[in-house]
Length: 438
Ligand SMILES: *Cc1c(COP(=O)(O)O)cnc(C)c1O
Image (tube, rainbow, N blue to C red):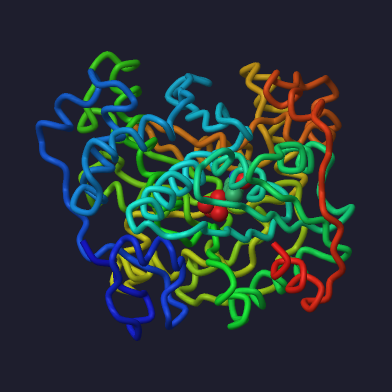
């Protein structure tokens, strides 16, 4: 299958090219040319299948023409080395817990899949080492670093702003060693991003080493996220004793920032996933919410909120949603509604949910939970996504709840490791000299 650019000015790309390049030549996002609906038999059998089998069926529809099926099966199983359980929070409201991976956030799924796919393509082409450059303000760096940890043929450089990521976040990419190098930049996140972009554009550097990016617009990070939406429906059917979607339509609420996660669910719906409608839950960075209300998209600089992984003022995957719906505001509104919450509302929701149900939300999941609770209509059943474990935001969440959050063992293990990082100025000439010396 080939991939086209949302900007329509770049040639079609193979999967390999789309994965290795990330962004198309015209700066558009790659889209698969076809979205194959899954057969009725798959949906009929889904709730009796394992997570790996459900995911493999979905993966085959996207990648089956381009990757040897046995290899694809291995990649899927290897990626999903942790569960994504659906748990009941209250009557008709369920939570899809996506924080059981190595870095306790949903980004583990896409990052692990992409790492394995890149490695497959490098081995196939007998190419030399690929170097992944990633700038992070916290969460992406840890998911990408851990996703690529120990993957042969790939070296990862994580650039992060000195003193501007939390201690928990920092230890998740500075203690790994092996093929991961953490670079501590004396500057801001924007400086890190600028260094990475300049490196991609530097001819001398590109002749010296193969460079690629692992940000969320990469098809190999974004499409695999659809796996767990199918798995959620499979689990829901089982937990509801075979109740059908005709009897109780399913609503799914997604805490959204760059809109990659919800976009992969919309692809799932095109493949036949029986979810009747979606809610995109925003914090105050709510340009998508405004677009739904007004039909006008007005990106603006992001503001800092409690749900910081959703502090995005110009979500890159909006282009994919527009493309998927033929730029029709009306069609988009038929499938997706929006919600927007202030920090005060997020805090209030965390307290209220804990008090009423005993369930501990993180600030991102809190937006998803509240949007579902407020938006669910009589007769519907819904699930929201818990995109990260509350312990990742320990200080914030403990401050709000007034009670301790337990740190999972795998998170505590990171905190015991030895920090290793390379100090770097914010000057590109220094960064370039460093890479040329590698
Ligand atoms: C990245 C992230 C989000 C936002 O996901 P998008 O795909 O960018 O919409 C939400 N919650 C958490 C915890 C995240 O790390």
